[in-house]
Length: 224
Image (cartoon, rainbow, N blue to C red; front, side, top):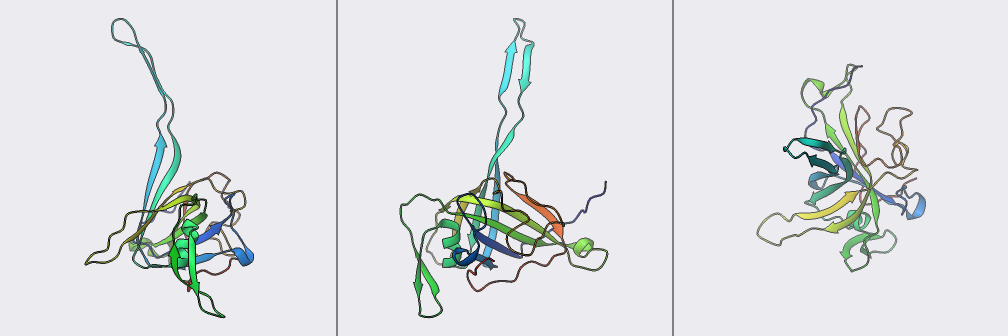
């Protein structure tokens, strides 16, 4: 069996999609989808539970029982750093109260943070261009590595500093299992092979694709 080996570099855009309490994409008038470039890095920290270890020694010090159960993934910590403040993005990720202004076309201008439980859920996807000789496939199409965390929750603000320097706004959350209806990704375009869907409970995935990353949106738009 052959595989497609590529060397990804940098990160092009991220997409945030509002989910319901079951981890499924929200559609229609109450939905929210945002594609942006205003981030500097996304750090991912897999958190594994080590398997329980059983060790019993004989009187001479040698092992009578020496066994360790398999480790398993509990969740992934996700820390996103932003150099641009987007109220719509913060609202999708945290569920906190957005400040709006304007008549006709409503514009988000700020955020208010409170002490309510952090129940918001969203999916996070990002796209990396491929470097070197693998930048394009055999037919000449540019290749990308598509990453997705179908269900991110418990999102919090990290420490931020006001100083003589570039403002770094940091939000940290953790992955949960994909919702039953996340399927091949929110919306009409998929970056997975035809017929492939994400099983319920999966925390993360990547795929090499020639499907172009989504266009940047001017704030949040509805998901149909």
